[in-house]
Image (tube, rainbow, N blue to C red):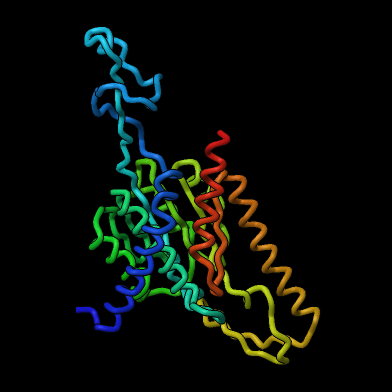
Length: 294
């Protein structure tokens, strides 16, 4: 039995996500993630405004007046959220921790999926896959996914994006829509990333905190690695130290952008300072424009 405060937090997140999906994201999601094809539904009489290319000439000839064929989109899409639950996800100096940001985005995407009658699943990972929730439909299932992203307590603290993506490719043989949510403080996953991008419709969601790029000048500061426990004394008063810190962060960000471009995958960048819904709306709009140009 979940504690009452946990249930209330999940419900609040559910309400916010549902409202956003109904008001903004639902139609955007449907338009950019198409089904697997079209299936015949019926033949009906032609009505003014119908596309003349849909006229069924055989039926029209038999009946003596125009009839058209109607088709419906075959959806049955599968959405899998691959969510980083490592120690660094519990960091946040602004409105939220990175893990809370991941939960909000996961909720938005999960309710987009179920509102379009698609399946949604979850892979929660650290330096190994900690939890796999197979894709299913329905509100109860979406709530379970959100609960696990928010409150699952991982047994490990490290990060291995490679392990998560390799596991995904083993358990999900058919093409799926994949959202990979992480801060990407990892390395050695590039080949697995490329392979996943070729096999699935992969979208990368990078979750960052401003303090991961800009150090405040507060003198000597002891910091601890959230994943290894290693402690380090840093002289934040030194301009050279702050410049090197900023340069390293930008190099990591630019390397991920280049990797996403080379794999021809989408990249969404969000921060712990808010604006997640706006970032998702921009992503859907840009993707829809790109698809119209193809």
